[in-house]
Length: 73
Image (cartoon, rainbow, N blue to C red; front, side, top):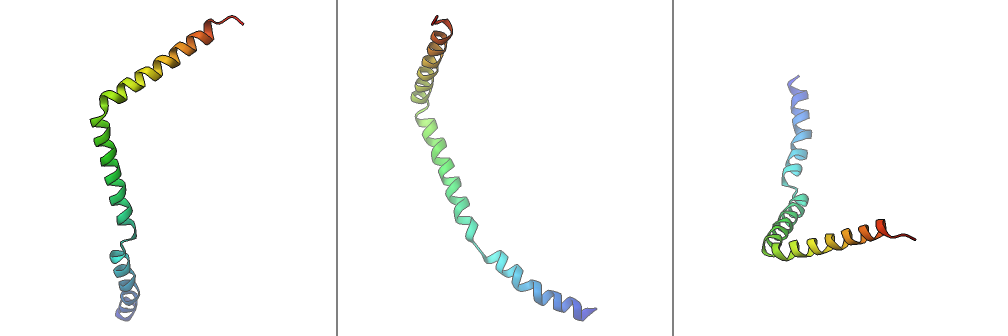
């Protein structure tokens, strides 16, 4: 029984060490967090301009929709 546990430990130990030392995914996670942070800061800085743009766009969409409904072709 002890021999089987030692064999299992000898097999698992290198796999666990490789798993915990591999850093492939961490750089991507950090990059995503930084990009989200930049997007939030830009949204806060340009909030009034974004609001004006969206109000203008939705106003044009509403006018176009009203024209499409009321037009008699």
